[in-house]
Amino acid sequence: MPSYSAHHLILRDGLWRVAIAGDEAAPDPVLTVTHAGAVLGDAALSHQGPGAWLLQVRVPSEAIGEGTQTLVVSAENSADPLICLTLHLGAQFQDDLRAEVALLRAELDMLKRAFRRHCLETADDGA
Image (cartoon, rainbow, N blue to C red):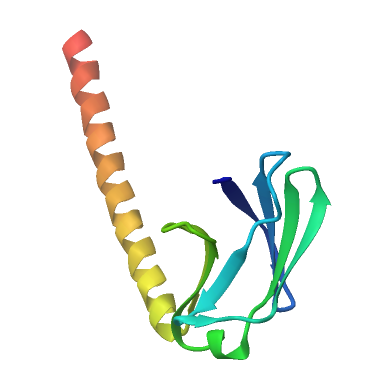
C-alpha cells in the first residue's frame, strides 16, 4: 500500500491548495475531503510530476462561520488523516487570544523579576 504525505501550500480566496507527495512509482492517490462528516465534492487533484500532486479544495461557505470548523483530507485505506485545515472564527477566540497574551505577559514579568533577583544575589556572592 503506497504512503503519501501532505504539505499546506496556501489558502487564498476560499481555495485551499495542498501539495501531496508519494513514491515516484506511486499511483495517483484516492483522497476524500470531509467537513462535518460530509464528503466535499469540490476537490481537484492534478498530477505535478513523479510522486507529486496538487490538491485544490474549495472551502464551502458552511465552513465559514462562528466556532471551529475543520476540513479533513484522508487517503483511501488509511485510518489517519493526511492533513487538516482548521478555521477558528468569532469573537470568542479573540477573547481567548487576549487572555493567552495576558497570561504570557504575566509569566514573562515573573521570569524577569526572578532573573533580576538571581543576578543581584549572584553578584553579591562574588564580591
